[in-house]
Amino acid sequence: MKLFRFAALALAGLALSACVSLKEPVGSSVGYKNDPALEGLWVGRSDNDNSITYVHVILNDDDTITAVGVTPRHDSGKAAWGTLAMTTVKLGANRYLNERETSDDGKPPKDDDAKTMSAYYRISGDTLTIYMFDSDKVAKDVDAGRIAGIVHHGDQNNLVQSVEVTADGAALDAWLSGGDAPELFSKFMTFKRVKPPQ
Picture 1 (cartoon, rainbow, N blue to C red):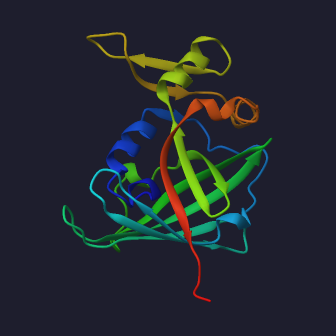
Picture 2: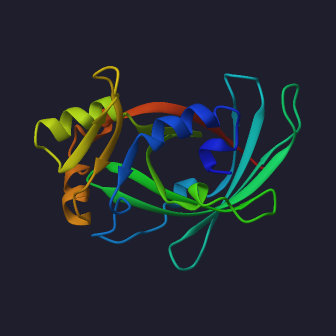
């Protein structure tokens, strides 16, 4: 269960993110360093079915992150939980995370879910906002030659079906370091920090 699937928004988020695939995870050319601002417990609410998801972010000593997510039983769905292995990197002023599912309700993830996915994120005070790649925006950069890739269009129309970014890690990281790189992403979900009782 991906971080972006811990809540019921997940199907939409996964569909959005799955439309853009990367040859290498974001930050592979510069190395990963844990972002201490992510540590702790976060809660988010789905706009689709009002389900609530808790994500506990644990920073490991080797600059990796373990995230444990729990979605309690709600009106339109059963309870679910899972774990993720994550890395974070800062490119310029932009913050990115890579995540890979390591368990889904205590079971090994399905093959597709075990793939690494990347996202852009912002933290403002006690609010964490996650943004997923927007395939139409990435396709425009590929078509303009700003990043190497292949744009796949639908058979019946010219709409973008998916984008493969084929650039190596160094080129990918340079592309995502720019001040306009956040414009390649669309807002996906917002989490609020859960503070310990005083």
